[in-house]
Length: 305
Image 1 (tube, one colour):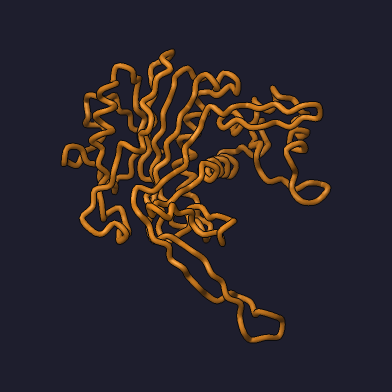
Image 2: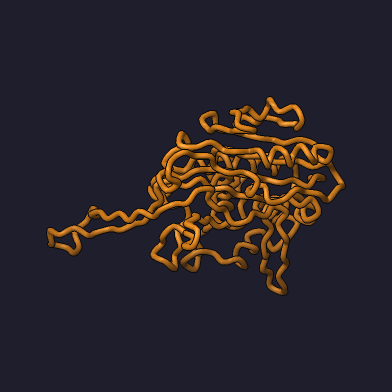
């Protein structure tokens, strides 16, 4: 099981797509109307992780590896609920924790016949928020079928997208909660891979246009119960055009001054900082473009997927 408190900063961008639709508002991308900031729920990111583990890493119910929270057809029709899912594991909590990586990562409520058991997830994310103001684009088009059999008029479709959004997520891995769900270092490595490659593999029609750009995982020294916090608020976009006109990562750089200074200040409490960075993303410190590996004050360790 993991023994170190860890902190995550994950950046990805979205181009001409819907990062996270609100079903109560015509499935529009979620926007803070006062600031123009794009919002993405932590549930969306967790789903990305689950879908990648299921589709690409063999957590499909075979070979002792599974995802607890996933859609499975019920013999009674429809989709299995939580109780039916628990019965798939014979309501055996040890078996659920052994097989279901998403419970080890994110926790969950396990509904049993006599009582429910709640596991607090060691991995928790804030809401993702864009680093840039975004604008909504309303698109109309024609469908593939007629509006009614025998008619020539085709149906219409409408959708909302954002032209460009650079989204930042902040997360914490709590080593204390990890004792209950039995989260391992291998699980955390799979989380890294799932955030990065899972985002890149969001290639459905509504999600095409997602690209991971930067991931930092700060691993603190064991038994300190310490973390810096709010890493997403210690970075900023640096641009020379109107903010709403940003369309690609070539239109800006990421200013890391506050983040790097903070990491350097607490370097005695840091074991290492695992990172993955898109080669096209410009990272700047004190006005100079940098490679994180070149910063000697902080034990940066590059990861390649």
